[in-house]
Amino acid sequence: MSMLWRSGSTVFETLCDFARRQSPAPEPRPVAPSRHGKTLDLKEGYIYGKRKMMFSGKVIVGRAKSTNLLRLLATLTVGVLVISCNPKAQQPLSRLDTPEHHTFAGVVLLNQGKFTDAGREFQFALRLDPHHAKAHAGVGLVKAYSGDFAGGLEAIGQAENEARSAEEKVFALVGIIRVCTLSYGVCLKIGTECSSDDAWLRRSKDAFDRAVLIDPRSAPAYFFMGERFLTALDLELADRMYSRVLELNTEYVGEAAGRRRLVRKIVKAMPETITGRKAALIERLTRADVAALFIEEMKIDALIEKRTLKALNTASKGPGKAGRVVAGQSKAKDITGHPLRSHLERVVRIGIRGLDIYADGTFRPAELVDRASYAMMIEDVLSKLAAEASPAPRSIGAPSPFSDLREDHPYFNSVLLVTSRGIMEVKDSATGSFAPLGPLSGADALLAIRNLRNALQ
Image (tube, rainbow, N blue to C red; front, side):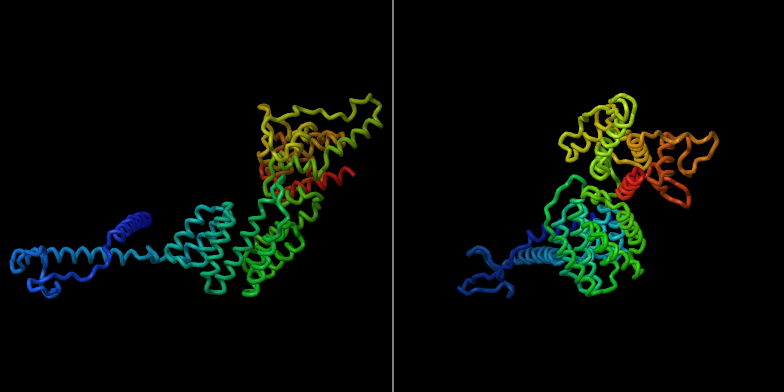
């Protein structure tokens, strides 16, 4: 029903535009010359026509009155349309059809990543109240999440201008922090280089200072400023902001707790390179991301060379047999022009199981890596570096220690090895689940690399 009404409203607006174009411009009151050379006002009951027309004919007078009546009715109709078509807020269709309700729904959808649906709710709010500050800020956030950062800041600037209450002003200022953080987030992609311009940092810091000056207990201001520091890889200040959110214990408590765990996991992993620090914030790593981490953070090619030389010096067999890495196909047809091409080619030459070329000759750098596949990669790296095979199969009939991975699963030995060595952790210690098909986060991958290097020392 609401969609039918909105469709009807669109047709009505079209008629309104037509009425405005057809409405005649104001004209002076018509007058008529008399037979005696005087100018007679039609209001006095006279009509005029050609110079030789007689004014006393009843038929002429009757027709003139009918014509005037029709003109009057037409003028009134056009006037009503013009007046009713003046820009104004749309009338609500139900008790829930309010700017506040649509804005609240839009914020919920925005936090769920449903940007199209969120944008629709914010637009509904603005139709009901074109000056609704939070709705304007919501539109700005939707634009920013869609990559239009300039448009996002412009919309949030309008929200600032429309803000009347302290809550609306803080909401708009927090929006500025979020858009600035998103604008720099594109630089966190591995292989992407950005300028050293820190204008986004200064602008978000200014917005934060103004927000907490208005409301010192604004949990959203502290949380999203924590996101800003985390994006800038300033882990200490990020942890401080998330801790403040937990102290306030009002909004974003669960999110802040999760982010604080992430920060501490990154600190524990101690990434040494820019690539490692960027990867730490990625929630789902791709094959290209893992290859870059193995080359830059793990320095696998250097480790293999070191282990190979050691094996050659101690082995009794002839050179070329001990510690030799069997490389697979060395060229993939889908990595030309990729920013991490050199990393991918080096990993392929090493021949890591799970990071090799597919049968169709592609590497598929954008393909996501799950936790079980990463365990298999780590197991293969261990076998190359430590000259050790997978652990002996468990005795027949022994139950799997993982609640979500059977002992006959192809990745079972790999998962068993990395968990028993303390290289990777189970996902849920309470249930014993490993989440083999779950996404591999950058923080988990980095922590596994750190544990692997410690195990090799």
